[in-house]
Image (cartoon, rainbow, N blue to C red; front, side, top):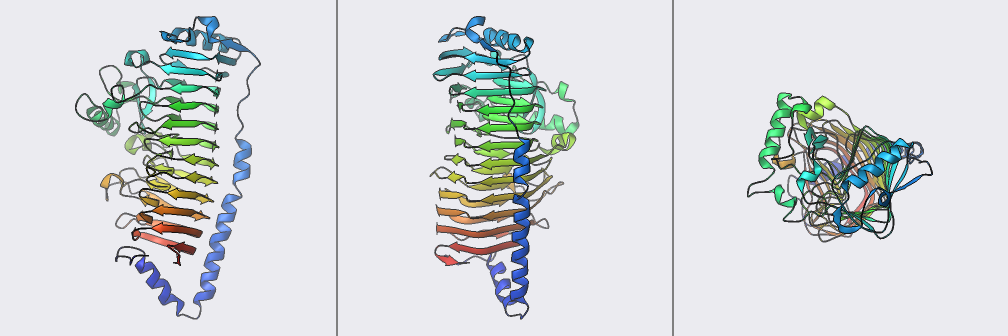
Length: 470
């Protein structure tokens, strides 16, 4: 292992060595380790009760094929109205299944209703139009943690109970460098001016109904967004090539995302699954190959996040596979409403283009809290940056009016193969990260020294780096 520069964990190790000379140190260290283990055990004991509360919705045994409402599966005829009629008929009957049979179904926005399951048979592809006009009129939505009126997400529900997207088919956003993704950066037209305008409106307290974007603007919609919904299920489908984030539950309760494949590695900001200000979320047995974070847990941003002030909590990530992406399991950067009680276990992460495995990112403009995050039995084949990153200076912002409160991050049983470094932990001056515990973990081939600055309570117990116990 290479020598650590002064701003890394060298000071921590030196203090530990000095303290070991004291006769009381072994007993104190043992008590501290026992206390940390007991705290983690008590936290993990919460998981069964959370999981029991998360129950997928059930639907009446009624089927409404979109073909009976005028849909043609040739990939050329636009089926927007047929989808709308099928959903309306299903809802009017008291709920059931809107069936998408094998074929390619071109459409604009699909809006779900109470007690409606959108089900894609094997061989079915819902292919979304590349014409922005097909996502008007504008709807109440959220863009990077700020509420506004904007283009409709491609599959959307607002204020609904018992909604599902299931099956073995494909949901294809059809975004590429010439459609939607080209809005992400200069040259104009691009989203930059609209992002700044939206942020200014939120800071000024402009009512959401007056933050109207859509036509003539360039804020990209999400592929799937379920807003203020209760009892949500997304299961089995493959989603790909979203304009922006792929799956985005917002202010939802009781969410199950199971055995979903997100195959969207090329697009900018193509996050896999971003539960935002949600409570009781299960993400299990999913596979992510993304152009940004694989799973990113969020809670609103800056002034608008403080106005809404709703946390994400009780999020379970179980037995998922993460390939390409900026982070495997991520919290942030939108943390303003607070994030707590996140548990991730039995996940496998590896790619030359997976930058980090565990990632927490925020800054002194976001504020909020991030605490009680628990990870165990994570396997990382390789990562392109740090295996574990906790950065309170996201976007290179070190100071500001709303320092985040970040701490109680517990990692056990992590095994990493190859990466530039094990840890990148950066707090703010005067606002340290408070408590990162790593136990019973191995980092096999780390090329560089760790970076640890402004951290209070960085504990390593039975941790091996490059064959040496640290």
